[in-house]
Amino acid sequence: MKTCLIVIDVQESFRHRPYFTENGFEAYLQAQNALIAGCDERAIPIVRVLHSDGPAQADNPFALESGHVVPMRGLRAFAPATSFLKRRHSALVGTGLEVWLTGQGIGRLIVSGIRTEQCCETTTRHASDLGWHIDFVTDATHTFDMRQPDGSPLRAADIKSRTATVLSGRFATLCTVQQALARAA
Image 1 (cartoon, helix red, strand yellow):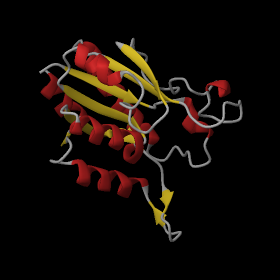
Image 2 (tube, helix red, strand yellow):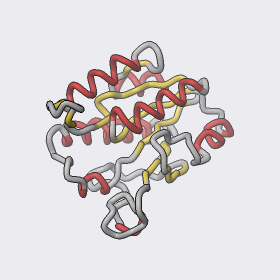
Image 3 (cartoon, rainbow, N blue to C red):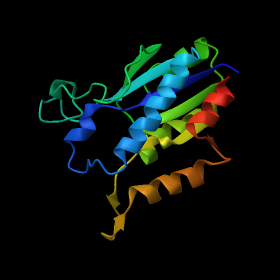
Image 4 (tube, rainbow, N blue to C red):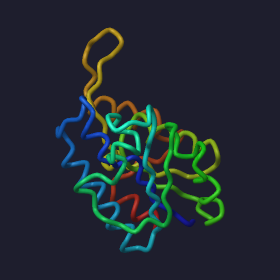
């Protein structure tokens, strides 16, 4: 089955948000870069997806005008098979990604990127509902601590664990970097 890697929202915008922290970021970046390197070595196409929304002004880090809607420093350089700019959580809404994947005969997607529980999970659920097989590489996704509605903390590790739990066996196969690369071979 033809596979491609989707690298979702790994962009400088996040470094300019108040919740950004380096906590766990280096481990994520190592896994993301290993996944990109493995796909490059195996000639697996890599799709870059970046996110832009909100007011079109320089002080909004997710606006093109900010100059931050660019690949994140430290991300391994790669030549994307194609790139998309999205304005919704799912990389499949309004981008042309679905058309491109279908035209390329892609049957399996390896999902990676930032934020685990938002754009990565939403894209995974959407793609699964459309019929793609999904390998969700939890280590190659990243998120940040949040506050629950009652004000109590919700750690990033717990968010990633919850995401893995709800996706596993229903919407995706959970994989390590090496497992995803082996399945794509």
